[in-house]
Length: 409
Image (cartoon, rainbow, N blue to C red; front, side, top):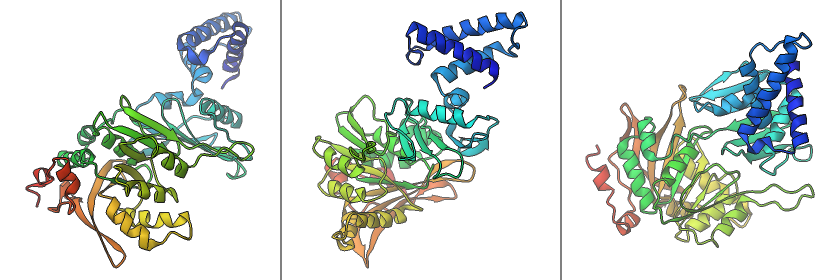
């Protein structure tokens, strides 16, 4: 920020302190205060006492963003095409637009980066300091913030903000974007309505959370949905739903709420469907136990393909303790997971579903058998001619997968 803008900002802050108002909750008031001080500054500049502002309107916009938003980064938050913002150093700020990264011309100072992070964390109640050098938090607009500070990083604060598209709200929107075919979308809708347990897999930024949100939009309005996550990312609005996130330990090292604890607590809340944002560690065991009780559920997992997702889900529960054995876990995964949806981010930045498989429930030589239902081909996502081998849930809900998959090669 230039000396002129810093001087105007300080005048606005002084007026705020004097009037005892909160600009963060009143955008119109913030804009009025800023324009008043910009006008006063320009009047002084005409007298030659201070330098002229090259563009008063632009200066006012930047000041409003600085005082109420996220400063120089605010235009990136406002741009719906930008999916992620990250800071490697004050002079190395990047964004991803439609899956493609690009370096911006924005240059900040170390103190400005720290001020931005503090402002982002203000509403979350979370902190980042030498005793807790990592932080994950949700921003008011639903974006996810991740910060790492020195001496974990070499010199500068590393900041990542993952935005979540509000334009993609259902499976039909994914069809319109070319991420999914209409036939596959109808099959997945049928899976959701029949209470299938669905695992969404893929690499980072492949669209797993977006797919989970789209699947959730297909649930019945009367369902009570409980979501548990590390930080809030999923969006279930206008329904009978409860969203819960983990909590970091206090300065004394107490009060931490883990994902495992949240899954256990959710079972006491009369859920019709349990959704775990992502399983990474031992909480996968608690998810399997919940699904094995007959409760429909969904979750996501990092994996290279659908079959690897099943293998990984069969391995992670072993982290829960020495008394957990693969002879229990593998058959449980085979019997609990009904559908695996694998997402991919290709080199052009396009996100798409490349595979949908249905485990049979059988285990052969320690390997979970699974039938491909859809796979990527020359014409995109195509049916393979396979059918889910377990039809009890479909039949109980009054659905017949053959009505969607009929005519598959």
